[in-house]
Every structure is written in structure tokens, then in C-alpha cells.
Length: 435
Image (cartoon, rainbow, N blue to C red; front, side, top):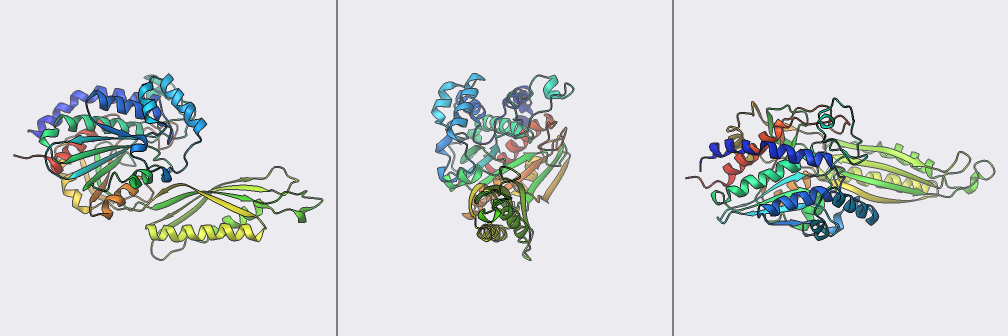
């Protein structure tokens, strides 16, 4: 097969790809609530005869971090159907989002996995009529929800990568799994997928992100330095009393929370590498003349390695417990999200470079670079690497209208076609049945 000609032919998909992305942008859904998105993806896969697993088939239910109450899920399912999602597919999903397409090439070879995230942000979209999504009629219809990080582009890109690879599957080798991951924001969804076991036979793993500081036409092949992280909610319970008449009878949960916060922020010194801890919110109390009987903290720990992050996490838990005891209170903690540390494997760089060389839209190629934040894909990368597989995370350059997670965010849709051609070209390098 002439791969260059095939890549050129993918231009025929441009309008459909952009149309699908805009449909998802119009119907954004937060983590674990992506019913419309998942149903649209499943329907498109079925229309093209591509087998798919979804929902609880690809999730381990012991690791559904920050999972919403059933009442919220029911509302989101009803909304998805009212907005045009297939009611039969929604019923088959049985209350769980996310999907995985499986492309059997029929030829012996490795198992390759691709991952694309599908959730939105809890951001209300800016409705300035000069913005492209507003002007062209695809701004968010869901109040307080917006694709402000490009996951609408990722999900759409993943679907069209599926279609493109499926069309040439007989010229490829092995099995290709394309994962549409729920709940990336807050690093909540990947561990459930990792623990489900669907990656345990994977030899090659690829994922990536649009933008992230890279402009249209640029490509960062190997992203390194993802920080391991844990997101925690802590509830401190004390005893209320009258602040003037009997303060000695109370146990002040706010004082415990403040003491814990001060103690925790001294706990992230580590000579082995970078460590982070942040208490992002504190709330509590019922009135100015009442000793507070409850306080809630939302915090996160991070580390350059999983070992460092685990040390910081342990110190944070000890600080919370100690401060609660000091003020006669109790504390309950709940994990709301988690991701491991990870680095891309150098072994994949030559394949990415060769694949990128066929894409004239890529005008600047960077072999490797750092990323001093956290990414949910790191769990999936680590799971594959743990049994000897190789993994890489790319940053696909994309001009953006405003910073990620901003109400005015939007992507340069030209980058979608660049990403589509890139994935197909790299997969050809890995799996192509070359003459």
C-alpha cells in the first residue's frame, strides 16, 4: 500500500471530523457523565462495523474515583437522550461511560493501544458573539460545562483514527485497541481502566494532547516528567458550642483544618526530586458565634516519582490525623483522583519521527521535552511499561484562543487533520505490512 497516498486521501474526512468535533463541543459532559459522547462514539463505531466494548466492560469498579451519585447520572442519561443520543445504546451502557474499539487486522503481530480522553471541564463557556463556537452555533448547550481543554478534539480524532485504521486493517498487523477514556479531568478515570486488565497484553501504547503550549505545526514526540498525584477530600468533624458562653465545650473543626494545612505545607521537602502539596479549598462552620463542628478541605499531593508522592501523601495524612486529635476532632479522607508518574520510552521516538516525516503540516519536530504537571494517561503508560511494553505521550501542536481551562478556550481545527494523519502514519511504521 502507498501510505503517502492514503494519508493524502484522509483530507476527504476533514469536514466530517470538524462536524463531529463541533457536535461534541455543543454537548460537553463532565467525568463519569459522558453519556451523549460515549453513545455517539459507539453508534459511529457500530455503523462502520468496528467491535466495541464499553462501560463496565472496560472499567474496574473499585477505582471509580469521584464517582457521582446515581441521581446525577440519571439526569445526565436523560439529558443525553433528549439531545439525540441513541436511547438503546444508553440503556446498554448500564450507567457507565467510556468505550474501547477493537480492530483485528487478521495478521499476526503486536497489540497496540491508543488512548483519547472524552470529558469536559466544569467551566461555563464565554458567549461572546465574536467567538467562533458562538458565531458558528456550536457553543455549549449544557450549563456550567465546556470543552475547555480540547477533549472534544481528542474524542473526535480518536474516532476518525479508528475509521482510518479499520479501512486499511488488512495492511496492518496485530490487534489495535482504541480507548475512549472517561473522567480524565481530576485524574479520575485511567486507573479504573488500567486495573480492568485490558492493557495487560499491550506491547505499544500511544496517547497525546492538542496544544499544551505547542503551536499548530509543532510536534513534541516524547513527553516526560509527569508527576504522580493524589486528589483528596478531607472532612474534619468536631463539636459545636456557643463561642461566647461555652467555647470550652466545643471542638473546633476549623482550627484543626487550619493547623493541618500549615503542617501539611511543610511536608513536601524531598531530596530525591520535585514534590508538591496544595490545600486548594477550606470551608466550614455555621455561624460567627458557633464553634465550628465541621470543616472540609480539598487538597492534592504530587511527586516527581510515585515513591516521592507516596511519601508526601503519607505525611499529609499524618498531619490531618494529628491536627484532628489535637483539637478533639476526627477526620475522614476520601480519594477523589489519582495518577502515577511516567516517562515516555525512547524506543518509540524513531517510529514517531518517521511517521511525522510524511506529514507536511508538521513543520517543527521536537524529539522530547518535559511536562511538570500530572496526566491521567500516566497510569495507562505505567501499566503497559510494567510488563515490558513501550509507551509514549505526544503533544500535537495546536493554536488555542485562550489558555486551557479558560472560558474562551477553543482549538485550531486544522490540528485535527494533522493529528489524524500523524497517528495513522506512526501506526503504519509500527504495524504496516511493508512490501
